[in-house]
Image 1 (tube, helix red, strand yellow):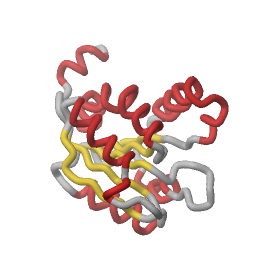
Image 2: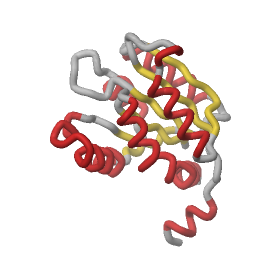
Image 3: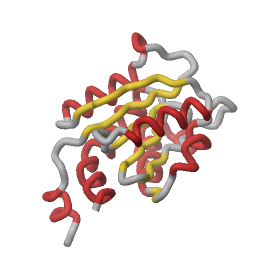
Length: 167
């Protein structure tokens, strides 16, 4: 069975949760979180929940655990905390949850980023993994990076990945 056959069996609409990791963003100025929801909706997907948490490992883990335990949520898109500064703690916080890492996601994201921003792309630590039958994406918090990840990688393969993760 090839990729096209798998895609034909995949759900056309996926229910997602959005977690914005930031010490400064609020609902009013969370442009990246809102962009994720907008692109998901335009792609036929539905956002069930959206939260903003501080760059704190306990808060990040608690938010991720809540989304994983929600039976309706099929995928989680986290934005923020994926850089190299001392406050970028998303990847360290989610590491215990990773069951199956998808290295190609980060590789492709950095390749696409390189085409847009040049060598600074290598500082991105964007990753994706599957855990508990759900897809989890950790992407940078900039709106431009979110739009790139959502339009070029996440939205086009979301149904396929969710189908694969649950079979």
